Amino acid sequence: MQVSQINIYPVKSFKGNSVTNCLVTERGLENDRRFMLVDAKNSLITQREFPRLATLRVEILKGALRISGPLLKAVSVPDEFVNSAVLRVRIWDSHCDAQVAADDVNRRFSEILATECRLVKMPDSTRRAINPRYNHGDEIVSFADGYPLLVVGEHSLNNLNERLEKPVAMNRFRPNIVVSDSKAFAEDDWEKIRIGATVFRATKPCARCVVTTVNQESGVSDITEPLKTLSEFRKARDVFPTKFSDYGFNKNDVLFGMNLVPENSGEEIAVGDPVAVLSPGG
Image 1: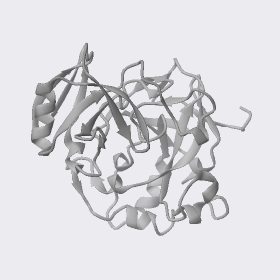
Image 2: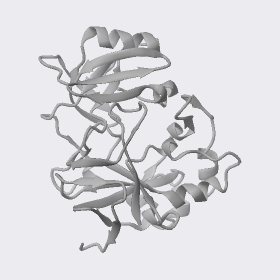
Image 3: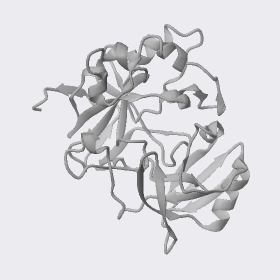
Image 4: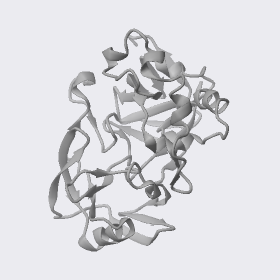
């Protein structure tokens, strides 16, 4: 097995960037989900409510982000939010401090979404803990939904696409790491994997939502697929008949991909790196 894709999502729910190599930090991959939009109540905004966010492309430049797309003329966002206001923001059931972008930037995003919103950044001083049920100490995460990374096997997608009338792309599932040459859904059973010098601990499979129905090129939802087909054979009760509740799943949660936590950081991973499945003890 080897790494076939590495993806980062600098702004949560915006278009992803494929890279050939990336530094692993304790929050996940470098530059992954360190920015997001929040609404008037300081809660996350995602493709669940605004699927067209998928069309917004992010370039990481020296000292700034450049965001552009069919809905937005290019806007430059300084990477350093110097002396900006600090908000307490909400990502599902967790809360953390974030810095706020300049008013002119926030106006641009509010205009294209026709709703009041602000772009926020997670500063290095913010340490948002992962789910305490799976936290082995002081483990933290960016603005990702719950865990630092997500891995999906190519053959898992192939298996799904064989069941679909219209195949979907891997980017529907927004993985950080894609692995080739593993059996379909082998990641369900992984406990630890090693890529390069980094060991990743598998926490729990990923329960999927309506974002998987959004075409990541057009920003338009297909309404039902691939969730409908996944629900026919990938519900938590089907995948883990006797222990789905041990993971904290509802029996009807639809699973695809595995959440990961890095057990060490500071090294790069790269496309082509071998992926080794480790025993529980390493």
